[in-house]
Length: 402
Ligand code: ADP
Ligand code: MG
Image (cartoon, rainbow, N blue to C red; front, top):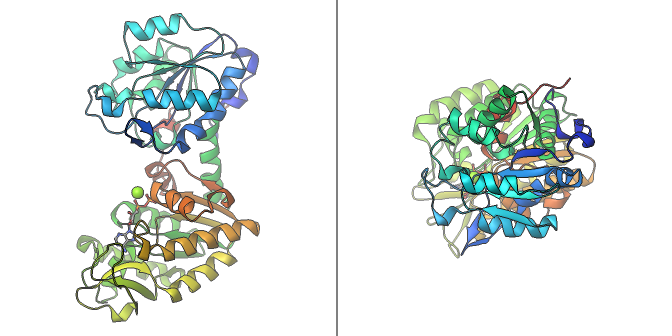
């Protein structure tokens, strides 16, 4: 990456400085508490680097999709509490993203202090990339650190807008440690993968991922396709898919992709089907050519687990996005769990694996193998857009390395 990283700066220049940090603290809440703190934990190294250096940290993030107005259901207050525990230092929460309360909290800061502003999306200007809003935040500090990989694919006022606004005032906009790490792992996997390079794609939909297939196909040695995505490919092969999830308007694209891919693209050879995707549903394992009317394909079958497992075991670089089946529902988790284990085993043997996508990350954790996988990306959409070869606006706006 040619962008400047926070660790490129001499720590002495950080002491006493007001530093704006955009993190991705967009975590699930349940009854007003943080239900999963992965993203908060992932933000800690950058924050600790800054506080240890004596910077005054003004932290911004969005959470969920409030409609451009304050909504207590999306308050970052519970995040401030959890962050303080993880950082082992106080985090002052300001219940508004801009205004006099923010200004006075910032004016009160001492070296090493952390202030977390309320959800940036409580203001309509954030997602509209409002330049005035970005300038308001930029006036609070003279260094911007973007560590929000999960939001880097969006040009918002608190991401690329703020980077531009800080640079316009003569300051610098640099990547945080997490953002840099994400780009390094994903970038290295694409740029110079150790071979064999195997990509695995699954999940619910083909639509958002066809660009990823296009970008990956020329680079990979094998592309394994599972999940509901495979169903649309089955249709393209003229197979019966019963009542399975299929994207009718993508069958033609799937057909073209199959032609282009040749034997590099592997589809499931068998599936787990049920008439109802529910816990306790009666399931059958069938060859992909034996799916009946009324069947719903909900997982890859055992023969496919073996074939995909063998490909993964032989790989030196692995990129995985999207579960192999409806892993949230017990009878249909086996394919995804087996794949997660195969990926972790490959990593134990020295392979490099990068997992992108919120559900895939959850599946790896559910399989109990997350800590054996080289890198689990904190960004779903962002990692896909990066893999598809798109420029991420939140990255593009950062200052170039000297
Ligand atoms: P990620 O979040 O990792 O990018 P996606 O959001 O694309 O993954 O897809 C995950 C969803 O795909 C899961 O909710 C899972 O239940 C669903 N899914 C996987 N296989 C199937 C299938 N055969 N039929 C219906 N849904 C499926
Ligand atoms: Mg998902």
